Amino acid sequence: MASPFAARCADCDFYVPIDVFKGVCHINKKMVLTDDEPCEACEPVRKCKFCSNFSSTEENLGLCKGSAIAYPEMIARTCEMFHPKPVAFQAGLRSDSLAMTKPSSFSPAEAANS
Image (cartoon, rainbow, N blue to C red; front, side, top):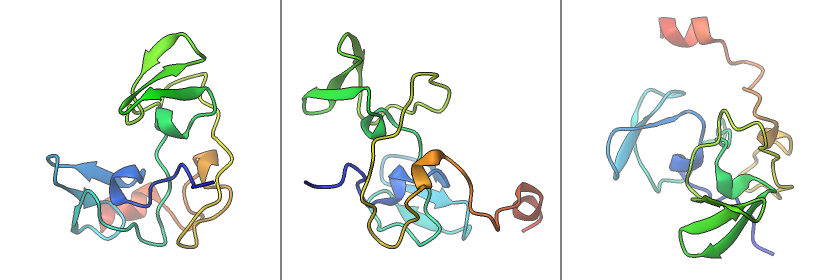
């Protein structure tokens, strides 16, 4: 079975979109394309497509808990019902990445000073 984690920068918590084609990586402070492969520091962002309550009904559309309409790319950062799917990660990502923790070396103050 294919991993629900699409290995692309747009699925990383550190990716900030500028437009539909590109964004900025907050880890390396560089411009990246939406579909670029993520770096080793990638942390999956909370999106409906990574939630165990999400079921796809058709391309780019699905249901949350079988009743509420949800989009796979919708950010679920504040969703209280978000439960990460078990995922076999690629590219060396940590197995606990969907726990939504930052890398142990991550420091918001350090990042702000960079």
